[in-house]
Length: 100
Image 1 (tube, rainbow, N blue to C red):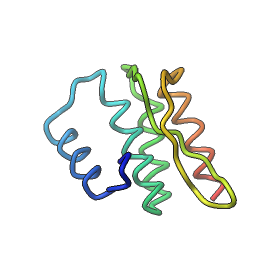
Image 2: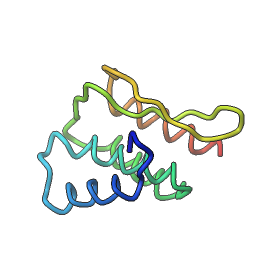
Image 3: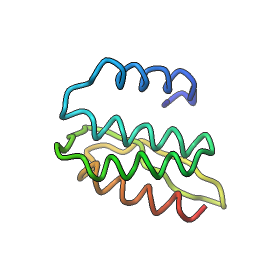
Image 4: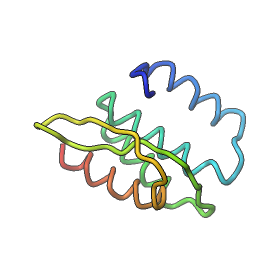
């Protein structure tokens, strides 16, 4: 996803979901699916993934993640390091997508 190859990212995320990632990775997978969906214009799907990420029983820890933003009226993203929590990022991303 960092290189902007969203189709390749989607294949990797789908493989992760298909092959049952560890319980502590599900929240991050749902969040990443949400980011990918938002960036490809699928805002309803993005919101669904962000809600799933927010409601995961087991929280993921990540050393880096993508954060959505709107600049000059356009949706974008940036990589951030040591995010506080995936749940907080999902809340922010849901709000960002809802602004569109």
